[in-house]
Image 1 (tube, rainbow, N blue to C red):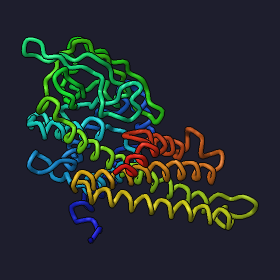
Image 2 (image 1 turned 30 degrees about the vertical axis):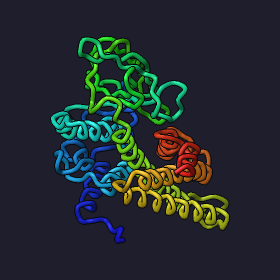
Image 3 (image 1 turned 90 degrees about the horizontal axis):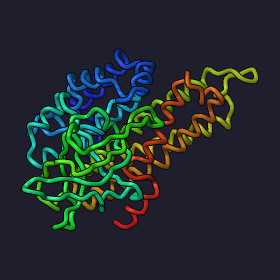
Image 4 (image 1 turned 180 degrees about the vertical axis):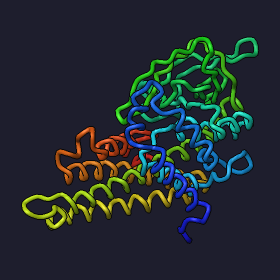
Length: 364
């Protein structure tokens, strides 16, 4: 199989790279990350106008991409610039679910950047398992109401709506519900994340909701949406590693110590070479996951878990090794490397960590 990017994907990558270079300075990213929203609405709308959100969706629902390699290309370039705007958190998975359940008008609003919809799945004590929600949906006088809680919902503060997983009294399966952000009975507790961003714990108390799809039949849709979001953050991590590699090699080529540049020391050359080899292995795993995104479910999930495990293991290794090769400067707030490293390490804890996906892969 030819893994060379198409002309359209090369153009997409170039467009994102130019956006990062011209319109996305690190200082602006850090300032926006420290706000309650955790990102810049201006930058988010600018990316929507460039068509970056549309690249995540099929043409038949208003996008112009949607394939695994489209998602991987987009998020690799976003990772290189450490872009913090929540394209994967309030557009990718939510838009996919809404498209599958027939809410195409809302998907169009998401693609245009006018609407943002968060996805709330994880509950306290469930680790990364979203398959057994305790949140309860009750049908009362023909209308659904939700009671329960969700934790660490990324970029949920300020969204227009939230998609929530729940169980019902009449079905053992997972049901998905759409809740307006201004609905009664919903409380959000916002907090900042370690990697520069925002998340919320959400409490629901008889909150009015709209059922998405059929009651108890949302597992497959949710599983496919999770695969897309997992691929996206794996590709983001790959882009982050690429930038860390560039920073580290440039530093070793220019930093003088003991009368010569650090890059001339053989021990540091060996460590750098090993780091580069590991990054190439991560790239292969992400490429394989992108290829199999639309494969049969078992094959897709096996490739996704292999990629996420590889990204988690290699990402932590690259972050630690790069900081050690830089020395003390690698930990300073003023130097970019530390911010890249924090985000890279935190990606291991989104959509399942190394242990979770290693077990999932072994059981598949």
